[in-house]
Structures are given as structure tokens and as C-alpha cells.
Image 1 (cartoon, helix red, strand yellow):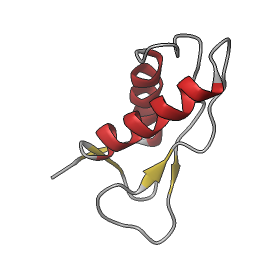
Image 2 (tube, helix red, strand yellow):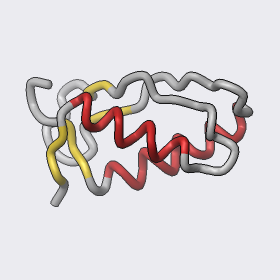
Image 3 (cartoon, one colour):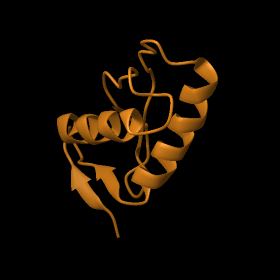
Image 4 (cartoon, one colour):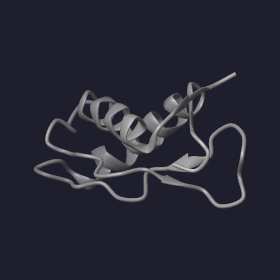
Length: 80
């Protein structure tokens, strides 16, 4: 079972998780967005990341890891 979060809460959690990954200290997640037609489970995605001084390869690996890990814990609340 996952915990529902608002878009702002989930963005903040994803941003902090991404920045904690090696080589991603200057990257940021400006927003998460809902996936269409998905109501349960991992119903959101990280569409864009601001790189800062981070390398694209570090970001790619980290975003996949963060999304997979957080998707097991949190879902985006309906209507947010």
C-alpha cells in the first residue's frame, strides 16, 4: 500500500531524494506530473530535471532509481 501525497509534497520528496544521489547534488526536480488513466500505485512521473552541474548520465541513473523507490511508497492524490 502506498501513501497519498499532494503534487507539492511529492515534488519536494523527489527533489530531496534526487539531490541525495551521488553526482546529483546540483540537480533539481521542478515538478512531478500525474500519469493519465492510472488511478492506483505509481500514478506519477518525473518529466523534467534541471541538471545544474550534474552529468546527464548521473541524472539518468538517479531518476530511474528515485522514481522506482518512491513509486513503491507514494502515489499522487487524485485531483492534484
